[in-house]
Image 1 (cartoon, rainbow, N blue to C red):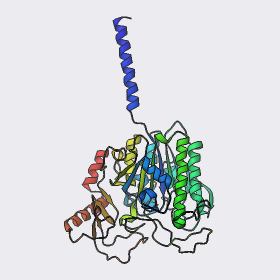
Image 2 (cartoon, rainbow, N blue to C red):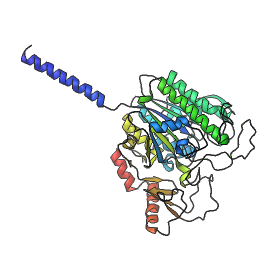
Image 3 (cartoon, one colour):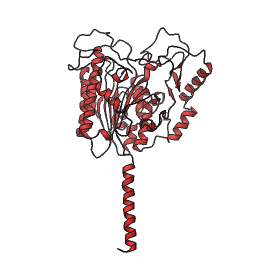
Length: 446
C-alpha cells in the first residue's frame, strides 16, 4: 500500500470513528407519555405525604425520577387543558373555548416525525363536537374519549370525530382509558416513529367511581378507592412500556389539572353513598382547593421520569408549570416555538435533566394572584368560578412568604407594602403581555 492509500485509509477510519462517536453522543428524541388526572389533590399520593391511600406504583415512579413540589397547573379543568396544550395562560388560550387558531404542541411535534394520540377527557371545544376544535384537528392522529366532564353522571365517547357510545358507569373509566392507551401502544402506533401519548383521565372529577375490584378496599373512602385504582392502572401502562422495550426511551410525565374539588360531590356508586357525601382529595399543607388562587387551587403533584436522562430519586422545589411543556418539548423534539403569539411557557429541559436546580422560571401568574420567588400577592377578590370560596376571609389584598408560610396563614401585606406593589404591577404586566422578565426568557428560548 502506497503512502497516499495509507493516508486515505487512515482518514476514512478517523471519519467513521467521528461519525460513530457523534451518533452515540447525540441526544435521541424521546417518546412522551403524559398521564393527566382530574381534580387530584396535592397530597393524594403516598410520595406526597398521604398516609391512607396506597400508591406503590406512583411512589416507585417518584423514586425513578424527579418529584416536583412547586409545580403549577391552572385552577379548573378546561383552562388547565388549553394551557398544557398551547403553552399559554388561559387568558390567552381561552380555556373551554380554545379556538381552532390556537397551536398545540401536538401540531408542532408531528412536523418532526412524531405520531400523536389523545385518550380521555378533551374539554377545550366547549364540550361539543365542534370538529375544527376537536383532537384530530388540533394535532392528534388518534383520539378516543369524552369531549367534556362527567358532571351529569354520564359521559359520551368519540373515537376520532365519530360518536362511539356512552356510559353511566364512572367506575369503568380509568380502566377503559388505560386499555385504550395500551392498545394504542401495542397495535395502533408505528414502532419506527417516536410517539406522544396524552392520557387525560376523567377521575377524580365530581361524580367519582371505582370498579368492583377497588370499591370499598382503601382506607380513604370512595375517593381513596379511586386513587388506588388509578395507581394500579397507571402501573399497567408503565408495565406495557417495559414489555415493549420502550421505557428507557420514554419521557413519562404525571400530573393533574388543578387542586381537589372542595364542595359536595354527587356519586353514583352502587354501595349507596348518599347524595352530597363529600369525597375530595387532600391539599396537604396547602390552603383551599379547586378554583382558588390559594396554593391548593393549582399547585399540584408532578413526577417526571426518563431513565438515564432524568435524575432518579430527586425532589425539586423549582417553579415549574404545565405551560412549560410546549417549549420544553420543542427543545427535546426539535420544533420551533410559535413566534406569532405570546407563549408564556419557558424551556425547562435543563431542570428536568438535572442540569439546573432553579430552572428557567421564577414567577407564576394565577389570574388574580402573582408569585415571584417566594413571595405571592393576591387581589382582594381572588376566588374563581365559586368552587372554593372562603366566605370567612376578609376581602383584602394579601401577601405571603411561601417559604416561611406555605399554608398562607399570615398576611404580610402591611409589613411589606413595597413587595405587594411590585407583585401587583407584575400581575398586570403579565395580563397585558408586557412583563420584561418573561419576555427576556422567551427571547432566550427562541
